[in-house]
Length: 66
Ligand code: SF4
Figure 1 (tube, rainbow, N blue to C red):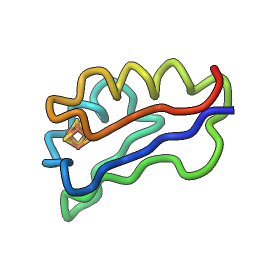
Figure 2: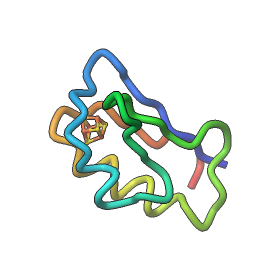
Figure 3: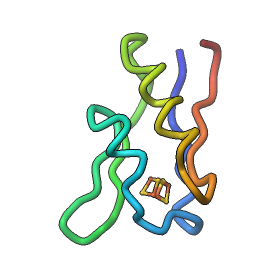
Figure 4: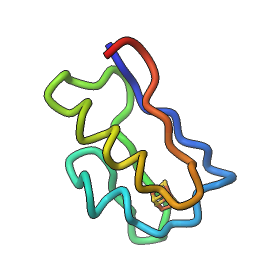
């Protein structure tokens, strides 16, 4: 199982991750990023990785066995 690690100190609220993977990442009304908590369903792992790859400040990591 994989899960998402978000470095909130790095995140600048660009929203690129949400554009790529809206099922996993969501910016709230205050510009704070919500990510799916806990273990990722296998069906969303690739989307989570794709969103993490496009983050311009490398604030996201998908960790765990794939
Ligand atoms: S793309 Fe990166 S900086 Fe932008 S909201 Fe997502 S995690 Fe934050």
